[in-house]
Length: 436
Image (tube, rainbow, N blue to C red; front, top):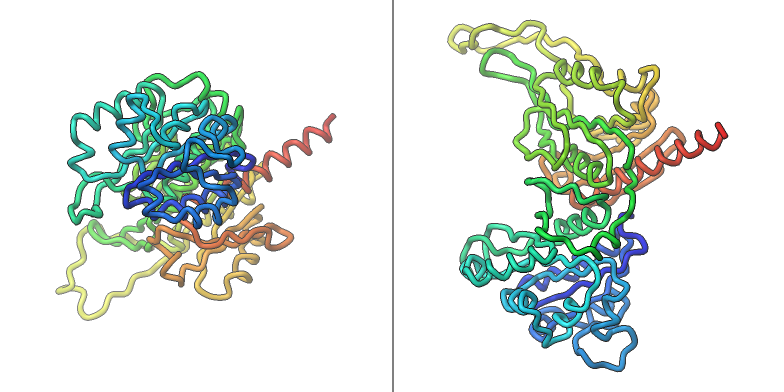
């Protein structure tokens, strides 16, 4: 769990997106965080304080002066690892920018000696207004992390920028921030780089991450096997799971190479991406990198077969008649090649199955000489190809070791990556101990 032993203060303002905050609280807790909540008077009208208290297990902060222990605006964030305000309204953003502390939330934020993240949520005209943009710039210059809002339908009935990011995205941002070493931000990273990070911010970041020192190679997406210059044989893989794994591995300090089939997904920050098309292209790219990696995760949906003969010109149905017979030959099995290499990296495969999944996964793990295999049921439309969610069952050579229930692929990737890295680091420690 990425946030184990972490205290996170969740501030909730009076934006309609406040209804998403119980889910955000739950996701942070699933990562091991101890979550405290604080709401403005308007926020309390949109999300029940009773609900927040029941979820968090702590009294909800709403008044600056209270007799409840550890709820005072000074004490609340004194030992916190992070404070996140979501949704952050234009009003609260203005107060934060100008140092106003007229309610429990703004007073706690002003007194917080920890990283502060805000997720703006408002009408697009309010968000684009020069005053709001100027206030956000002030906060950015002070080292506040700003999760930019999304573009889409708004509560007012209009459409445009101003939607608060989804709880899973915000949880991923928080995990990324608190697990990064040195904050190696880039243009396309999740969190924009603050212009002047506060010195205290660095004290709350983990000194190392679970993937520090590890070199990881991940395959992702489909492959395409040409029939003629305009037609291919391919599959439904979107590449989302593999890209989520690459991002999760990089966020944990690993050096990541992503070998991607033909997909239209942005490259995760500071990940070395190699684009390929065919199964043979992917095989060659993986083999070329094999001596330089510690872990290989085969997440790509590689074509099992290719055309025995690729037609140099477009096939015409007028000349082919009512049927067309294509001869296919088997492609090399990439993850089996990795699993049987000598020496070989820690090798993880995926089994996308529609029936008898557990038996199929165990057979593949043994036949391909893998360390782990992740089984996903692609017959399910809610977690199959192209879905934003996934659910995995993970096996090692002794049997099932983990069930990862349905969750956004970013969350599943974080859980699986953490499992892999902990196993590899543990085996390294054992090997080192044996040598001594």
